[in-house]
Image 1: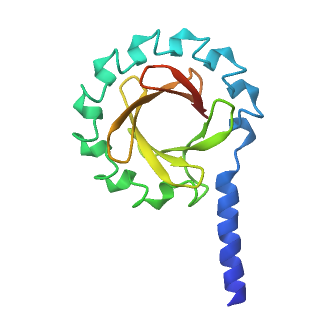
Image 2: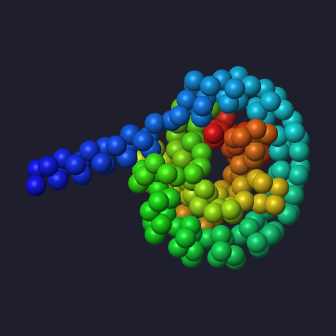
Image 3: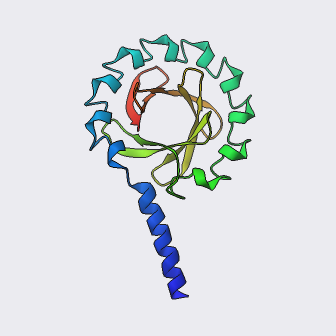
Length: 188
C-alpha cells in the first residue's frame, strides 16, 4: 500500500513539474527574441501593424465583423458551439485534458505579464476557442477567435470583457484592454 501511495504521489509530482516548467524557447526571460520589450517586431508600441489603435482591422471596437456584440457567430451567448458551458468538448470541467495541471500534453500558450513573469495559460480547446487558466490551474475564462485571427475574451458568465488578443506577427499573442491599449501581457 505504501508503494502504491508513493507511486501515485510521484506521478502527480511529475505531472505538476512537467506542466509548470516553461520550455526555454517559450520563455521570454531566457529567449529575448520572443520578448516584446526586447524585440520591436512583436511589440505593438513599436510595430503599428499589430497595434489595434492604428490598425482598425484587428480592433473589435472599430470592426463590427470581429465584435461579438455585432457578430452572432463569435458571441457565445448566441452561438453555443463556441460556449464551453454548452459544448462539453471545450469545457475544461468536462474535458480534463484541457487543464494544464492535469497533464503535460496540452496545446497552447504560456501567458506572461509585462515583466515577462508567467501569470497563466491559454489552452487551445478547438479551432475556435481557447480556455484560460491561472497559475494554479483554475479556469478563469475563455477566448473566441475571429475571422482575422484575433480573440475576444469572455468571463465565466459568458460576458465579453471588452479585452481582446491579437497576433504579435510571429508565433505569439498580445493582450489589449477594451480601449485597444496593449496591457503589456503576452502569450508564447
